[in-house]
Image (cartoon, rainbow, N blue to C red; front, top):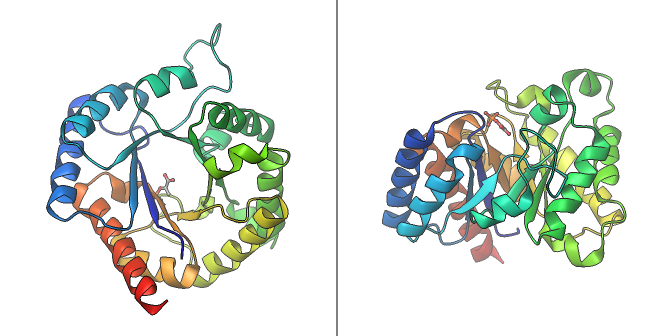
Length: 261
Ligand code: PEP
């Protein structure tokens, strides 16, 4: 089992005052009961990044900072966009790339996902490549080939020195925000298929996360039986206790599996 990674995607929730409050609560909970084995990351909205970074720094928190999106371009006439340099200046160490909501609602094509991923890793920042099928693709039993194509499109040809910066998040769209998590068997099948494709592309060591209605109740089964290395968490990351509970599940599962080795 790889060292677990848990990323909280706050989406378009929490203004900067609320974000500061949540970050303080997270810092206190994780200070009282530090996570020994799990990397924790939060992805607030752009306008909260500066405030959240300040709290994490003043609390000397081990939680790292992510952005939910970035422009593929370096600078210039891109009204409404944010560049990677602006994010790194704020202490952002991770960026979500190609979340299904960006793909579906903001016309983020596979080509733009690939270009954005390159921008992120070129800046020595960790990229979380989000992939996953919608219900129609799954009903047609095309989920494996669909996700393999998403991976190949984003990762093929990426230079070797950048590969360690890539994490993949498998997020079936039908499970996101629906309360209907994929079953451990479905996740395990997809995780195996994703790892196969990643190996073929030269990414054998890449961490694979699952996202889609993860809670502390389904986290252990998903991690152990689904064979993932952690989670991308939406709804349950908006409360400090539910997010830290998921981190603790990962910590406990990792400790148990390390003892068995
Ligand atoms: C997500 O936003 O990527 C996500 C998985 O959301 P949720 O946990 O709410 O399904």
